[in-house]
Amino acid sequence: MLTSQEREAWERDGYFIRRGFVQDEVGAAMSRELVALLRRDPPSEHQGEAAYMIDDALLVQPESKVPQGARAPEDFVAKVFNAHLVGGARDFAHDSRTAAIVTELIGPDVDVFQTQYILKNAGAWGQPWHQDSYYFDFDQQPQIGLWLAITRATPENGCLSVLPGSHRLPVQRHDADDRPGANQGYTIVRGLNESRAVPVLMEPGDLLVFHSYLLHRSVDNRASERREAMVYHYGRAGTRNLAPPEMQAIQQRVTRWVPVRRAGHAVGVAA
Picture 1 (cartoon, rainbow, N blue to C red):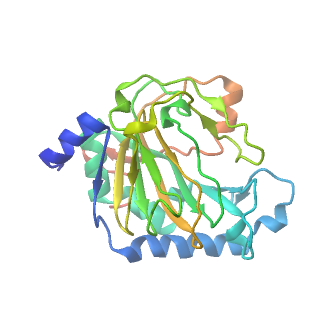
Picture 2 (picture 1 turned 180 degrees about the vertical axis):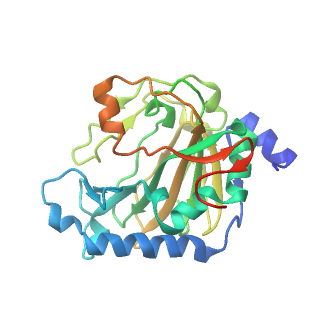
Picture 3 (picture 1 turned 90 degrees about the vertical axis):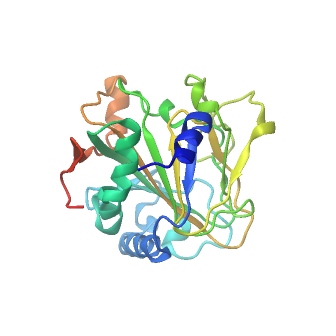
């Protein structure tokens, strides 16, 4: 159940934070599992590829601009998509407490359709202002994002910033991120008044719940350590993709719809 304060924050700001939602070890275990897969099939084996698949499930997106001092395979990776298909990340997606938040916000029949294991390595660039629904051209809006902190998120290591209340805006115009070396798929909403922007400071195990219209960005990682997070996106069951066929073909690599709840009851993986 959402608290009254969470409900008010959701309506007013488009997000709220559950502090200490899980123990630190939950995220750490996800990280170890996914890093092991990256070391088994590293980016160095896929030179020249903008992205590559592991086990026909996980889509690995290497950094376009390799951070200085990169050594281990994971140091060269920006994101791993579809983690909700494997191991601990899959279990979290179907967890009863996680599902309870989502179903209270968008209804009893929900699917998880995308995950991103984010490795913001030391020196990595941030992602400019954007709305997630720009990427999700679906007939049912909004979607729900759950951002689980695996490590601390600070202004120094590239935490998110949000514009409270911006979820009440329609999807804005998004231009391509034209910085040389920007990661594939990055876009930017220009001309925003950033005076009300709020940095989202997180500790391991904290959970950010946010509306898919909420304008948010991340800043560059100026620290010496990696900032890690797992981001889940949930939508209503039966949602249709309205994007053109050629765009849907691209999106199918980074979206895998998996049932989580029907009429409030667990389906798929046991929760």
